[in-house]
Length: 216
Image (tube, rainbow, N blue to C red; front, side, top):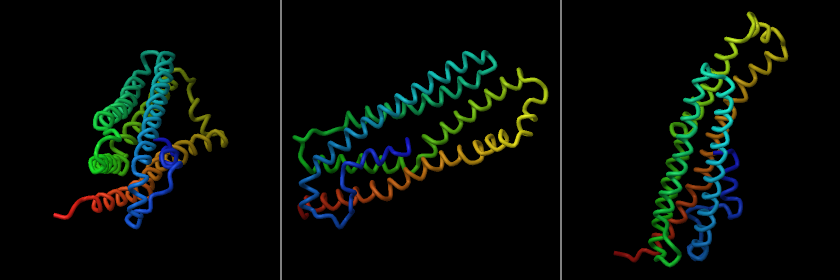
């Protein structure tokens, strides 16, 4: 998930306020917000999957230029495709369980809550299903590139690179700062979205559900 995914999903809606929200307002805006979120999630999943496919095409072309020595690229492509398949399966699952506006509001609220709770689990635990596979994929790409380069580079080539201060600073900055920062940023944005957007919206819908549930 890109850094701006959740801002895209929520930017056209007032931020949820949680359990202090007005029940009448929640009921009046529930269906519109539900449909907007569904459309935004669909766009997000399509864009994410499309970007993943383009990355796989690029890696395949890169692998072709490397030749047989670049075989780790195949594993990297497989891992990236696995993440894409996960997104597609999630979208199909959500589509199968979607209720139309003609369904009772209590059923629509229950379904929305179930989706939000699942979303919370996925985004709060983004490391095992998203960051880890993509991190391993990135490491395999680097390994394949270094493996092929080591076989074709002249002796002492890599040592000469590290002796150049500018090149050494770029390499160290990329591996030590840029890449870890990108992965941490993805983790942070998703964790913040859970705390600032998903959790308050769950509280709102739970409050609305309680108000609409007749006393036993």
